[in-house]
Image 1 (cartoon, rainbow, N blue to C red):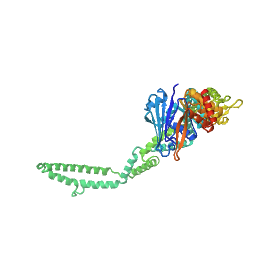
Image 2: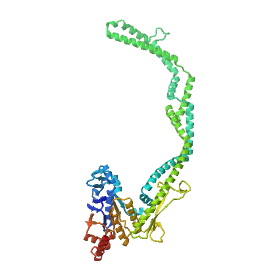
Image 3: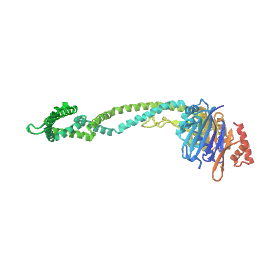
Image 4: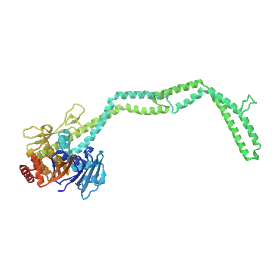
Length: 581
């Protein structure tokens, strides 16, 4: 059978690992070692290769960078291959090369198929290639939210469809409810705002200001306030230009210019240049006459009217009241009035809007109730199948009498709920269901939440059983288990190893373990070995075969590689594992 596999990883200057090559088999690979640090670094390296969070502390002290490289065989039609090619990666004979570089300064770079890519792409590929599970995942399984997620994942489209619709309606209800609450809780503030706007608009409407009126009145007030001085100046200027009829002997500019014009006009024919000057003097005379006439008209029309001045100042005072409150100029006041009228219309329409939002909330709650019921039905149906499948797996993991069930329930509420099954219940972004995984470890024992009723070893086997069930319904090509067998020993450990070997028939399985019973079932056995020269600790990875594998199992069994009893037990364990696959 051909499926996606991680062929090898190359690790350089990562923590205690220094230039190690980890070759993985297509089936079941066990990783062991004397201490957990080196084994954990193998898991950490794979996590980096799959887009995990980078930490500069992982780089060996004194090294410039840490590099993790991986080779994977990938079906060219798979989602991972298609996504990689979309990013510009190249596959060579179905092999995809992935690398992650982490500098000592904390910078991280990723390459896929020879092309530099965002680190996030590694995480996208990982979703379709590898499922990683460790002791933290076991603790996560204790949380009801994770148990609901596991059930939803198993149910597939039966839950995903209504859940997507439910999530959309739920988000809309949150938005509508927030707007409705804002309208109702701030009703007093909004009423006060409407009153202030109404008063202001009435004040502006009563004044009836015109655009630019304030500037026009300012100019008129200035003119009326200095009418006498303006008239006197105009009269003096007129006399200087046109003369005073009551003083025939007086000299004025118009008479002088006229005399100059007559003098040159008489001889202009003798020189073209002088003729041009004569024309210019004539133009000056005409201009003086026009200006003198305008001055006379200005003086006659200037009216020092104190009544008009008082009216102008009164109007300016009224406009100043508006500009003090609503804008720098009358133009600004008119803009404020336009915007205020629009806002007042909005505030006056609050009652209608509240009615619309209330009706929409009611409709959304009804819709959510129907969708929540559909989710409950789908989850209940899937829970029966899921629990039955996990229970069957536990039987093969040395828990023959254990039984797993799901409790799916809702919490009733007197207010702010949705109606499911004819009663108001609490609801959230994922529906109204509270999902809890229950375990009855032996006949006669009442089902209890696994957080309370499962030991460490039982929890490890429950999680493994869950993953095996997932492998049948939603498979991924590679599974990495980091000490998933914690708390397991004896016969149970043998059954865990046997079940992992069976899972490896259809997927690649990599297990970091401390149990010889599990390691004995592996197709390939790797050991992380440490060396220390007094200043630097280094780790390498070595494949155990033949006699070396017997010695490693002996060490794991008794802590003594050369013990005859341990060696005999190790050989017996290997033989039993080969026969019991």
